[in-house]
Amino acid sequence: MIKLIAFDLDNVLIDGEVIDEMAKLTGVKEEISKITSQAMEGEIDFGTALKERVSLLKGASVEDINKVMLEIPLMEGAKESVKELKKRGYKIATITGSFDCIAQRMKDELDLDYVYFNTLQEEDGALTGEVNGPLVDGTKREILQDIMKMEKISPEETAAVGDGANDVSMLEEAGLGIAFNAKPVLREMADVVVEKNDLRELLEIFDDGSSKKASEKAEEEAKESFTELLSQKKDLEKTLKELTAKRDKLNDEAKVFRQERDELNAQIRGNLDNALKYRDERDQINKEVKKYKKLRDETHQAYKKMEWTSGRREAVQVEDEIKRLEKTIETRVLDIRKENELVKKVTDLRKKLQGMQEDEESRGEALKLKEESEGYHAKVVELSDQAQETHEKMLEYFRKIDEIRSQADAAHQKFIETREKANKVHDEVKATFGKIRKANKGMDRVKAKERSIEDEIVRKKNSVEREKAEEIYRKFLEGKKVSTEELLLLQKHKIV
Picture 1 (cartoon, rainbow, N blue to C red):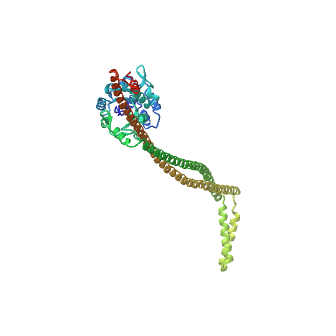
Picture 2: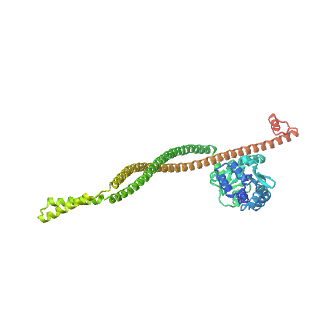
Picture 3: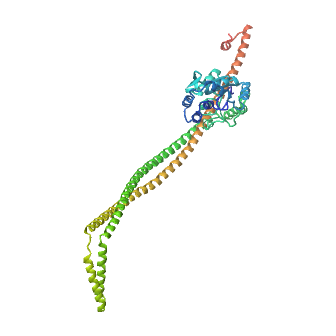
């Protein structure tokens, strides 16, 4: 039978996240919301996340914050549900990592029996960025245990309602754990999941001082003996061990593929560095080629021009004409008149050739320019060969990069596939953990039920014995003799 219900506050009793509302006053809502989300998903420690968020609120006006706290709405159905649950006899508590400025309002508005919260430090009407309280470094489990001690009740007589990772310990401690519009981390381990954002949904779970669903669950589990539940747990633990080993093996394989991929990528970077080095070297050589081509072409043009002005070209043309005419005279049959004409022409050309005075200085400059042009051309050829050789080396490294990249891509794909398999097995591990937790709770309920039955038997036995002892005492008062056994019975129940 449930006697105590412990609620989280933010997004459970109230419709909102208190610290996110405070963040709007200081312009740090985005930063705080990000940290809040990570904490609720269980990605970072709650105490660390709380201190980081509160530090961002430093300097906020306490008066402005108190005004904002009055504007935060209750969760749908909160007032009606808490009122009805208290009417049915439940003790109601809120255990929150949130702050005094909202928790005290909830205590008054909802008439809560227990309220545990943290306190924001302030100075001169502004927040200092510091916080203290039982839930800065402590856990909700510890607070719930303290309340149970004060109420003198067992975990089986306790229910807990939460929505995020910081509520896990509280739901684990309680006999009945309820995830209310919760994050996946809490849904996985809760006994009951409430999807709708309306606390009146709880009234169907808690009925007249007991939990319908808890009772149904307890009755169902009570049908199984402790031995059967223990056997189930052992089977689950065996499955868990196998799944854990499979997951770890897949993670190890993924690690190998990731390492292989990273090593290949390192090789790619090394080859790329070499390829780029040769590319830069080739480009530098090509700049030299371009420079020498320009010098060659300019020198060659100067040479051609110098050769033309030196008269050498005209002399060569006369020599060529003399050779052509002499060949004609030697090789063709001509009449005497025609032959005499050609001979005379050759004679005249020779006289002309003799009369031509070549400019030796210009001729020397022309030859010098020709030699320079040929030298530049040789340099162009030499550098072009070097550039081509360097280009081939660059291409060789790029080909290696393509080959290694294919291997790296294959290793990366294997890494992704293996990691996805590991993640799926990890989901099975988490699900099996949840089943084991539920089996443990079932065993606890069976034990509690057995203890309750034993206690009831003892109570009835004591009641019968006391009635018998009282009857013996009446006989004793009437003067009737009392046996040793009857006297011991009277002493046992402190009648004499």
